[in-house]
Image 1 (spheres, chains in turn cyan, orange):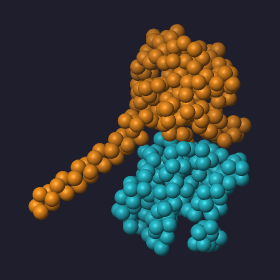
Image 2 (cartoon, one colour):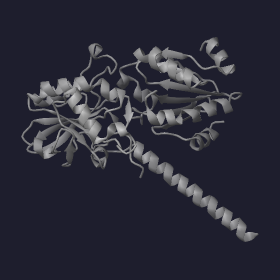
Image 3 (cartoon, chains in turn green, cyan):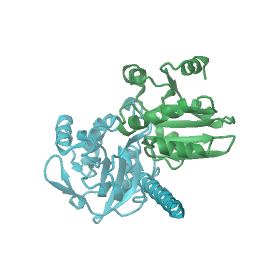
Length: 154
Length: 213
């Protein structure tokens, strides 16, 4: 991940949006570090997703000095990156990393995120490869639930 | 002092039990089971946004039905509206029409009200019925979780069985870049009397807005 993204996060500025292909997700899933990743699959127009976004933001802020990284993986259309996604991220001053996954053949990758996932959003995957732990949720999470699930990882 | 301890413990246990039950309920809701491939579909009878009531048995003389759980507000569903109309035109003529069902909780999503369904159907010129699953019982029976979510049903002597579950094709963003047409392939096979090859696929979609239990 680029140093620029990390700097933006540390200085508390609004995040930029990184358009990624599946290979980026693959390398994230393959890395062995003792970092807990919280991947939230969302979209700007998804009401329950937008409701839960603040909890993920709070989580990233709370554990800024720990090995925890929140990545908000947007399912928005790639053609709406500059008209919709970037304005949304800027307006909400999101500080977590935001990726836009540009892979239209969802059938080819949904089960690589989790076998249980039907493809509905919101969905969240929490994993730590060094600890060999992984949990997945195809539902909306609240602050309490997120905190409870993370306590098993940190 | 002792009483207070037990009271606190009781409250703590009750809260934790209630929380556990709530989580289990949410999990169950997210992973609803529904009909398996080959499963027989139960009769349903729903209000049509284009007027009247439509039931599955109305299609007993057809070769099958393409059932699509869709809605008004979801961009993934919108991205497929034109493609649904094209499917209905192509396969309706071959006695294998489209039936669209909206199972979203309209009390939580004003966009999904019957009035807005009527508007959508007439604006887009839906050639197929657009049904409101007001109790969400039909979505639950099918195991539909998102929009759009397709179920291709084969009809044999008024017995409808599920032959394909999943997405329409392999590119929601750009219809001109589609390489795999899952629903068309499934219907073509059924019409030819052959088994469906790819029986299940997944797609990203908007979670159906469930009513609070």
